Image (tube, rainbow, N blue to C red; front, side, top):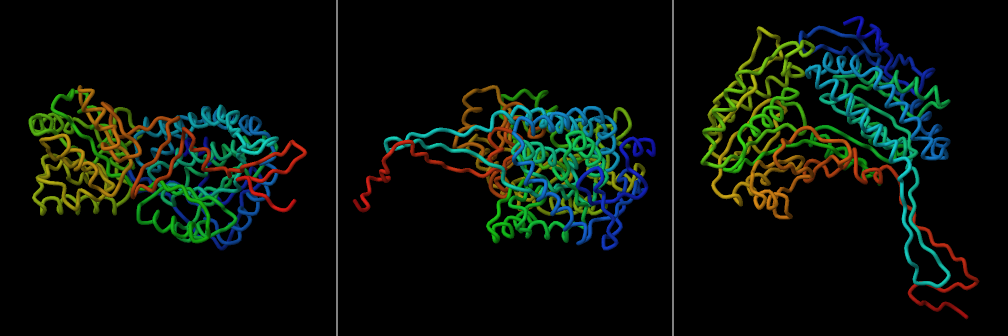
Length: 507
């Protein structure tokens, strides 16, 4: 472990505030934070969090850097992001292993998360030459109208523990090519990943003779986050986390007329039609429900299965679940590591008991595994007679609720009858069934898939959801517009001054 930490410049005690290679800040007003390995409950390394003094310094540096960064041509900004992607490539394996060590997801998922960071950098490099405006026809002769986009300012990025690197990159790479600077507050559960990433960004910034483009504030959780949310110097806050906290963030940012991008909870469902390929379905459900120990916002939590095949599919899933290797996520062959902490385990057990009290039947898993470690559990499958209030909530744990339907309209109604609207999928061999699911009267989610699962969003498509998921979009399509300000311009190249709408004003 020490070799891994040393390779990523993680020491026994680390500073948590930074704006560049020479900008690691000491702050006696900050608290001491210890990152814990969820696999064995042992400390990994400590962090001195940012206090009020270092907070102010970092924000000032981000604002100062923005004044110069916005004037650098976008393709040149893209060159820095290109080099960031290459620097991440060089550290992909150790950084992925650190994610696995600190968060508990398996090694290949950790490395896969770093690949997401690399992919968004590649996407952003191309985007740096495609920040297009448009020309419009004016009703006034000798006039031209056009629309252009300008950098917005320093933006705040607040991320969650389950993906300690990728959501930062989704925001930071796009924001940087748009001409913004970035202030990152990572989860206090996974601060070391953020510090390792900051070391990488520092080297890239130094090579381009800049600082303050990528900035770090490891805080105490609610305190630092609330300060950022209410800081008018940050015109945009991108928040990834729970619905409850996200609702507060959205309201507080709106109160100061700022902008927010909210990536909140999911309660993702898969509809399995009678004609579905069951082998394909089982593989997709396994990764969707068990991957990252059920701690993804895109985790498959609800399985809505046609009555004619529900027993057969459930039997196949039970057999597949029994073969899931669990243990140290850094070991080869392991498919599921621990939950992130004791509270997550307790919440899972409470949800299973509530399901039983609501008429549900636990048909697989759902037990603690103390022989592996305090935070290890068996992934659970629970048959539910109906979609109860519990099923409509998101429990951040590997619980799969299985329900049945007869008519497709019934399945779609059940699927949409939850507050969240992130990811969805249907398994079918019928094009009409698939197209109905994808129609305006089908899935109400931001992501809708056919014959693939709910997890594993691909860079390039806009990521995000509807309803309680927050409505934000990141990582692709035209999501870049959220990081810029729109400006409409009219140029009069004539010697006349006609007014719009034919208004006559004076002689």
